[in-house]
Length: 421
Image (cartoon, rainbow, N blue to C red; front, top):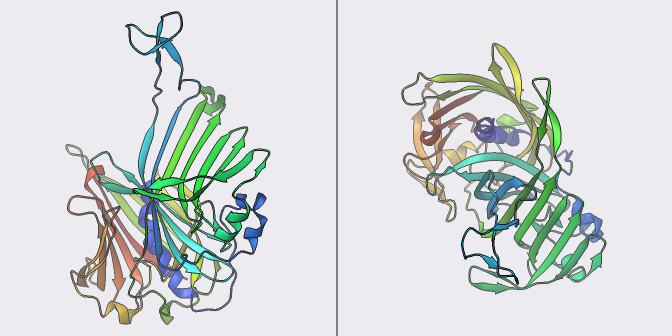
């Protein structure tokens, strides 16, 4: 299911290119509004000065789930080591184990208007083979400019609330060291019956520097094949730490979107995922889906993506509708103005991310496997890593298809646009 998500990202831009030409604004706020509870001024606050289209933030992220009640549990030590109590006995602290993972969360600011900011969010996970990454999730949201979840906050509003306390919420001035540099921060802690969150935000910029979260779920019963089955209580832990803030240099950023895609309402797609494990025959799975336009601003689109696959001879929904966004301030939009495609050269590097090490470059110019004249833009960390090819039609600028090759997962994905409405 994750694989479906990552391959659909390019298709979003195709729709973007269309309705962006129209000036009608029908956008909805889809971001997290929890900060408004104790910072109501954010509802009308402007975006921080550094929030601009094409700005990228990258955070190192990690998460784990462990059984409740196991962390910190003391057990007698079999030898004379560990913690020693007043009676002379030694104890060890149990270290709980459970599923865990880490990677990066990448935020690309797509659009900044006086009354709305739109952000595309990509989650990358390490695949267990060194520094190699694979895409875990692609989504997006639109928010009021003064804040975006807890990723940023208008610094003037933050200053008014940098030392306060109310039931379940507390803030304080908190210095934080990042990359060897000492920064002035604001610590914000919230507690509920189900856990707590903690954020440290830079005072001067309003940018999130670090966040952590702990949640607890009580044991319960679920039905598995019609049988009630007990599920043990679990505690979830997650953290994010800022690694990068920079401005992408996108050749087509801020340019008018191609007129050939005005008035698009939806894009249909279809493809196949093939898994080939050494020693076994290939296992292909056909899929299809649609991306619908649900809202739009001056230069962005809000979209809803859903995916279906054939299972046991039936077409079933394998990915519930997911909110995504698209705009011209993206490296791999689904529509690039043809005049900009004409200026690209084979081998031209468009971007090299210093944190994820993902390189975006022009792979080839010419006919694709189906004979269409296109420009292929590739995103990859290098040879034998998870690689995406985006095929743009040289005449219209539309994204015609997306290919993914993931050697570590023995997986190949091929996907093409089948219908534009």
